[in-house]
Image (cartoon, rainbow, N blue to C red):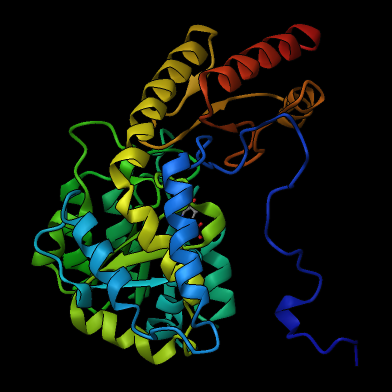
Length: 365
Ligand code: PMP
């Protein structure tokens, strides 16, 4: 017997996570570079202080105030009269998606996604003992509906996980593809999860899957406060779906999974939504500038609706990644072989990135 007595499939597996290095310019985990304003920090501090007075008690298990605030916010960004009972939240959208697989996946069931995509998806499947099938995207990272149709017919997945915009490519899904997939999933009682972690960064004219919720009872749209709301440290992810799907998740959540401190923090940040989302506009502009600059340098860059850009290709991408790191800029070695991903930071950080990339390629082309 090998000690500790891990499940066989967990033996030798490294915990997921990008390197957390103390580097001046951190552009590796798609964080928002703009911290909360002084007014927002003060509001969060007051709300947390108030919550602290009753920390001897368990928090509101149904987090009704927060769900109400999240529903109101979603109704400003594609949601159509969503109510608190059509919203669910947990500690990051990672936990939301794990709960989705705990509820709708499980032994004997299959979850599907399409590579290259977010590398946590197979881990949710493994941890919930759900079978895992990865289809593929086209060479240009666009979505291949014919391939998806075949894969769904063959495997009849109980859950399909699809980010829009996709990580790490930044590609958004067209509306008609989402609608068709929801209909295809419904044929075998499958749930379609559109992961909109980066939705607020989408280019104008790109719709949100929230608009389709009324038409498909098996559609789930997940969001997070980690990116646009600049609240990655608070761990608050959420989803919108039908009331019956939200209710089903209450069966698998741990009691009181959202602490009173988390609820107070997230509700206070929501009250500052206009200010926090103002920075999103700056990041969108900086993204478009970064993509244009990379293309001017002769690199291939995937069209991005997110707060990052995937660029390449490099014969030795690790050497390029290391060259940037040596110059104080941390980006991410992820995606298909030869590609690198850079998160969008402040204009100063992106200037450091451009300088470091130029210097790295001049030193070792
Ligand atoms: N979905 C996608 C596509 C992501 O890239 C991430 C984080 N990088 C998440 C979900 C999870 O984010 P969080 O748990 O912070 O909400």
